[in-house]
Length: 449
Image 1 (tube, rainbow, N blue to C red):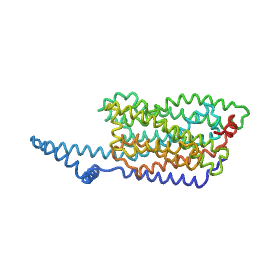
Image 2: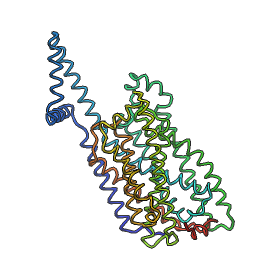
Image 3: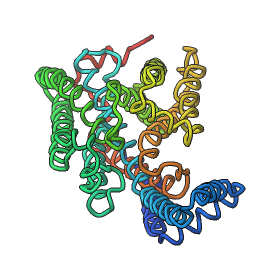
Image 4: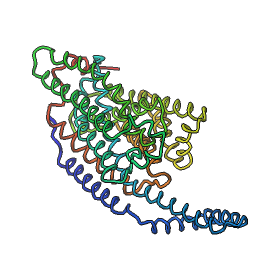
């Protein structure tokens, strides 16, 4: 039986406290007055050689030549106020967006592991039963993690000023015909109901599969295993639909004017490879602490092989989505990538290197997949890359060019990393780390690649 070490528990609590303090500080310092923002923009313009100021001046002079100097001055001032107000709103959005990105990232890890766990049962895989309890521990985070994501989304539109989802703002909807056309789906009531259905379905499967798995340890027959097999097959059908709808609601609708038919699969690939990577990291950690003696280098090789394979799959979907939209050059679609190339070039292209180039170079060799420290190094880069992937999905629509990796982002990651570690490793203490009643356990223990 695994025991949650005091050092790890203390670390998780420290991360939660530091993260919470940083998040609180971020929210307190994000509220700026309109005059403060105007001053900030004026300083930025002077730092860039006054380009914006000169441009506004030239426009005013040109208008004056036509006898409308006063009117141009008023229009310029009004435009400046509107721009400053827009920037002020983006600055206030940043803590909400940073918190949401981190919350979704850790939630999707748990959801990706749950899907991988169900696939192992539905396919009756013989190599993986020795890792089932690790997977069950990780999926314990799904319920609190998903509820937190939904709560942040709702709070941003009630406590906040529609900081994440503009379609929640009645004033915006009243003046936007495109969003009005989508209001049958993008409305607060439907958003909440769908979110609760998603979470309930995922967590019910997790509850019963865990219950049957533990019951199988002391059962004489394999009836519990058969029950898990049946509900796993049913869950995967439910998951395919709800994961796509969740990605539309919780991610894609931050850009309500944009859509991609590949988006559900794209988010799935990101969550799946992130979840598999965390399985590898936690398994390696537990084995280094003297647990999981039944896990050998062949199991590690197979997990790393999935990390490699789904990194390639993610890249295929990323390129398919990007290439088709960019080549078609439809204004309503291509603006999504133009924004990211103009304002997010480093994280947008950097994540491709971290999520594709790095894994393919590091994990292509079969021997390297058996070296724990090598897999850990590759896994940490992959996780960082997929965090940036979620960052690129959320930030452009919420904070525009006002992004930065600073206190809001780092403290949010620390907060949810601490919570994730605490929940997962607490769950690992609730049952033996070996699912000894699984009928395929012997095959798994003797698995050799």
